[in-house]
Each structure stands twice: as structure tokens, then as C-alpha cells.
Length: 229
Image (cartoon, rainbow, N blue to C red; front, side, top):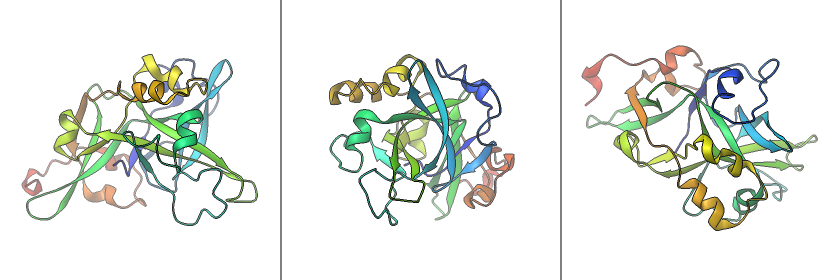
């Protein structure tokens, strides 16, 4: 799964990653080194002639749910996403890109402890994760816009930490991913197969365990190798 991530790069940096991204003016959200479920994050959505950045809440609330309650999935499995009522409509028409510099995963060690790891590009450049978004008019008086992240079986270095990883979409397929006219199940599923798996992995401090901690320390390499067994 993907239950925590970070985004510290400015939109101007993501404009090099996402074709057609409008990155003028002040960023809608400040950088965050520890984005947790129910918090706001930046996503890119389709808009005629361009790609628009918005701040949405992490934890999908489909438009048809009248009483959102506590069921707000943060992840959706790429293998079954087209079959689940919770995700089916958004999968066809409301796809987004989640801006990211890295994500965190926890590995259970032989001593029983869980060690957090940071996973990101080997060149430390920002990237985007495949996501779905929805607008729900019942969740609040002004409505609420939410998103979730799509995951796939882990491969490469990521598989040494956890059996799932987010789908990281390359620039070549991002425009198609965002385009709601690309709506056939086979077309969309094929895009999910292009995910990048060339990631670097390093341990970080358990400081990241608490969502209340939100500084660059969350993403700094953890040097004490004595606990990594």
C-alpha cells in the first residue's frame, strides 16, 4: 500500500515532469514531508487545453455516497479497480496525478520492530503517482473533493520493503491518463502497466511515524544500521 508520502518540490519543478502543467503564481499548498490520510495534497487534473493543480483531501469519497462516514479508501488496487463500485466511475472519467517526491513504507524486521523507509527516484527528481478523484456534494455544505492512490504489485528495490507500491506514471502517458475521453477499461489498464519501478530505497528515522512531525528530518537517511535487522 501507500500510506504516507512527501512533496517538497515547487510546482515549477513538477512542470518539468508533467507536460502542460500550469505552474504560475504561489503554490496552493506549502511543502509537506509527511502527508497522511485525511490531509490535503496537490493533484493534477484535466482541464481543456491544460492541466490544472488543485488541493484535494486524501481518502476517496465517491460522489454517490450520501453518508461518507469512515470508509475513505486511500489506495485502490490496479488489478481490480475497474470492478469495484467504489472506484469504477472515477477509473473511467476522473483520474489524476498525485505530486510526489517520495513515499514511505514500513518493513517488519526480525526483531519485531517496523523500520520506515523512504522510496523515491534514483536521481531524486519529483514524480507523479496515478490517482483517482471525486467530488461529493453530500459530505459538507460546500462539498468535498478527495483522491486516492493506485497501487500495483511491487517490483525492483521496492519489493524488498513491501509487496505493494504506487503506480508511478511516466511523462509519455500522463496526458492520456488525465483525458476523460480515454475511458475504455482496456485502454486505461494498459496505461497502468507503464509504471516506473526504478526507485532508490533507504531507511529513515521513526520520527516519520507520527503525522504530527513534518520537517525535512522525516526524509533524511537513517544512519544507525544496528537496528536494521
